[in-house]
Image 1 (cartoon, rainbow, N blue to C red):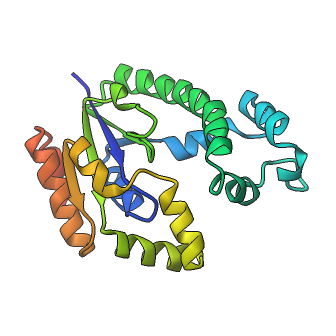
Image 2: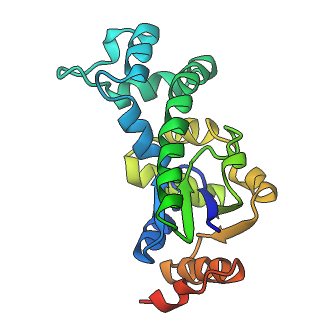
Image 3: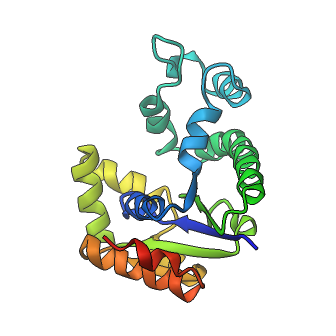
Length: 206
């Protein structure tokens, strides 16, 4: 029986750090962001729909979608963000379902779906358990500004485009507090996996 775990968080919460830890434990991680990038590549169905909706001004010289230009539009316009999600999310779900079926055929003990908008997009039906990577708002803001060289206003706009992390706590089966050190985060992750019967992780301590 394969256990499917949904890994989520918020922008700059450290979800990618936990995802990397899982990969280091030889756990298969299916990343929604990667699948989303593949889904909007030149020539794909979602690509064509996005151009029809947002125009060719969002394209780079090579014809690919300029993610920064598109992001600048949707982070400040809820309707346009919902429109984009309505185009991209169905394609991403299709791609992820294909990979889930492949992993099940390979008899993977655990599959992790790394989905930033797991709760917002109501995708919990895809998973058996959920893990939230949590940081407090002040830490999230500081990390995002430093990572993306954003102003306070720009960083807040991106954070406010998602459900507040504090609201996600009650929705998650397990919460990893990522306000501290990497070692503390790893310790919590191992504990969660152990509680869910996956003890192989304990053999992968560094």
